[in-house]
Image 1 (tube, one colour):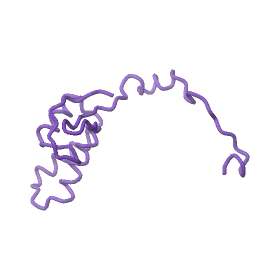
Image 2 (spheres, one colour; image 1 turned 90 degrees about the horizontal axis):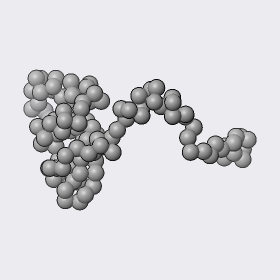
Image 3 (cartoon, helix red, strand yellow; image 1 turned 180 degrees about the vertical axis):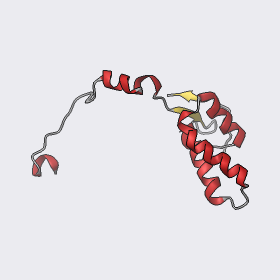
Image 4 (tube, helix red, strand yellow; image 1 turned 30 degrees about the horizontal axis):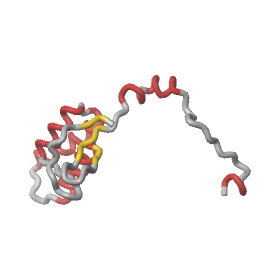
Length: 113
């Protein structure tokens, strides 16, 4: 539609943003998706997404959640992007977070992808 009707041109190239810009913004050095693997199926999940979904689910659906535990989960959500791989792994193990599909507890260490 945009090419034919609006006379716009498609940009087809390997990189629109120069690497120096991504390096200066911190994306090259810091940007990594930490993953955990379901040992039953081999499916990989983003560790931060598993932790975020767990915290949100508990806050929204657990009527017996204490005020202290709720505050802790809100704090985890607030600092989620700043957690190291070790801290993220400790939270996942500490909360007993399982794979969404199989409910398997992952023993695979957090992988950087």
